Length: 187
Ligand code: HEM
Image 1 (spheres, rainbow, N blue to C red):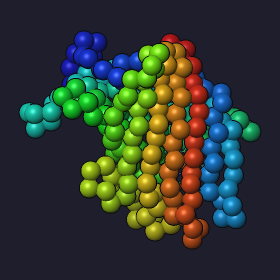
Image 2: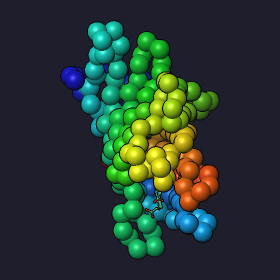
Image 3: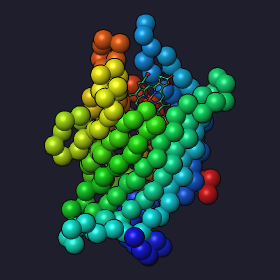
């Protein structure tokens, strides 16, 4: 890792900073149906320099932490730590992250520049996929398996929007665990 400030972060550069969102909506599984949780959140993205892999691949790295709070009671109910990387040679973006349930995701995809200067990043991963996978504890595999994960991130200046869907196998059925939110840059 080196050169935090001079690395070319490509389509990820606009993420660096601190963001707040007040308009999140989470749809989460319940044994007898689902719950809808309006939420607020903070996301902090930091320039983390670059890294080379096998003396071949050079990745620009952004590190982040996301903290999500339930509007109903102000309590934090989701925590996520991860990295976004950009490979200038192939334009591939990876999003590797962990959540404190014993689940780790390595999603991959690309960024697309939109008219007007905004950027859309689409990422996906699936349990068992040989390219972009999901790893989870035996308990989660057997009781609340993350089958797949898709995420769209839209970055337009000081506005950040994301929508993500984690397909779960839980309580004997498939469940579309969905989260979407819009954030504004504060730093
Ligand atoms: C803003 C983002 C997210 C929020 C607010 C959120 C919130 C929740 C909530 C409220 C539950 C129901 C269980 C509980 O009350 O603890 C849940 C379950 C779960 N979430 Fe998330 N989640 C988010 C993102 C994710 C992501 C990205 C993944 C994995 C890729 C994930 C994986 C799971 C799994 C496996 C469960 C099942 C465990 C259970 O219901 O007991 N979640 N989440």
